[in-house]
Image 1 (cartoon, helix red, strand yellow):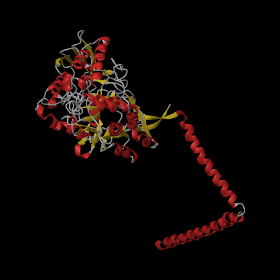
Image 2: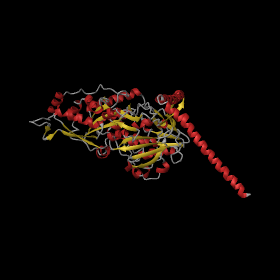
Image 3: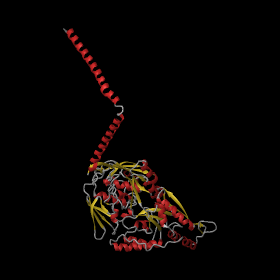
Image 4: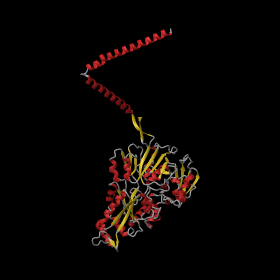
Length: 585
């Protein structure tokens, strides 16, 4: 029985296999006869059919694109959170500490890590930061600040008024060697409670509120250190602040500083995930870094780079205003630079328009006064008359400086009228210096240009006052109080009186003008200062530069136009973005 069933099964299998083979042959014959054969018969119209099929395909693709476009009629690209913004900067960053400012790049990073009681907005106005409000006593000597509640340092420790009091003490301690000390001289601070700070001034100071923008330090970290070691403390490489961004990686030798968003910032977590500063040796390298897609922004462009920058399709260059002047300082202690006749003659012979043209491609505003146009007390009525080349030669001849024979340099008692100006290498100031040298050469004056790096300029020349002439920029600030730059008490480091100018009339006017609250009375004092300053001419104010800031067009959020310091461009950095996405209108 089993054998019979097995036989029947095998026979059925063979029958199925034969049926499959017959079906396959029938199918193949049908395809050959009715499809492939017909296709060969349509050889004449085959190309036409292929064209029509191609057109149908193109129409389908176009229809798909049209559907996408119609769908986006109700949408637009909007900035979205996320991503890291990278910026090229120039200047070595060795320490990050707001009371020990080192250079502009350090100031930029400090602005992002630390917060002050107040800050400047995009209109050069003082607005609250860590303080929510403040009051000033009728006599102008007492400032009471009310602090934000719930603010924490980036390590989670609560921020209190004790931190504010500690920061003032650190600035004023001579062992700290803070260049900000002169702005806080004689000021005391008390903390009646954790959310209130009271500053008491020895005299009224109309510009005092500007000083409260300085970043504040954490007492719980630095309160126990020796002030003499403040500059060398590890905190300066691992800073802790209350700002919108906090340090992620900083090795001075790596030429890169990486910040990450502070999730506990009082204004909310920034939209950017982080900011990276890449440090370059000069402005040319910084621009080249953008061209190579290594960065998304450039902290500052030189005017000479503007044409090259405009050729980069996606780079947006924004001119920003700063209360800044480029000044040629004559050190009063030098035999030649300190000579009144030489100094006055050379300053009055300068063609500032040509200097500005050479340095800024005509974008700078020629100036003569140590107070900016538009500031309280400004006037140019005391400006000395300009001397022609012939008149300048006569003045030098009368002073005993003569040209003899084939000599092109004037001499007096065997000494040549030859001086050296020190300035910043690779900057617009270097171009200005060479233009000044060209203008003085026909007078028989030899001016050598010594252009050095920023670090060398500050450490080897400016701080020890080791120069004859110095060409450098100074930021006056929003208030016309220029005490720090021209009062005789600021002649030596860390003061900023780089000409070492000394005048009792100027000192009296500056010291009186800064303690008055009445604008009309202040204007009178600054008028007296300008009269004395123009009579003495301790320096040549040349022009107001333009600050060129550049970012890729993908970066969104910049609002700044009128700044006090370049770092003020980060006023609204919490809202900056580098990403976009489609969204419904």
